[in-house]
Length: 128
Image (tube, rainbow, N blue to C red; front, side, top):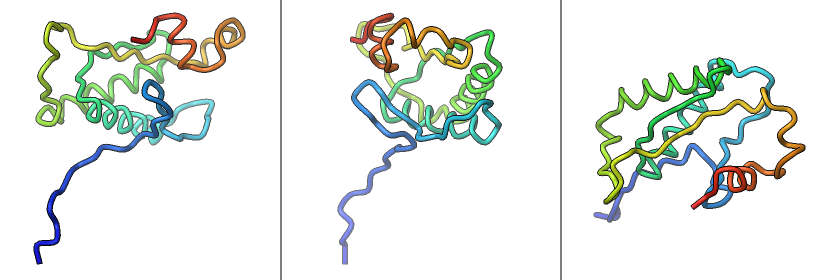
């Protein structure tokens, strides 16, 4: 009957809270086990695909969880090079930076800075 006119693939393993803030809707945990690490990896990968970005990945050296997630994401990107082939923006030779931090190592900062991640990142790094 030729009812299907168009088919699109949409990567939505994340929930957009605003244009600069997202969530994976994971329950809070004290330690991140392998299933949660893989869920975070999949969510970050879907977010990168949706944004059409292939970033340089950096992580907090003192956090084993951040290191594991960065490693899982790097391996996943290498395994899926065919879908991560994005042309860089004009005038921008350097890739964007994905910084993976562990908030469990920093109990005082929320009391000294803004109360939301988005406001704190804007205050400390600046969002453009």
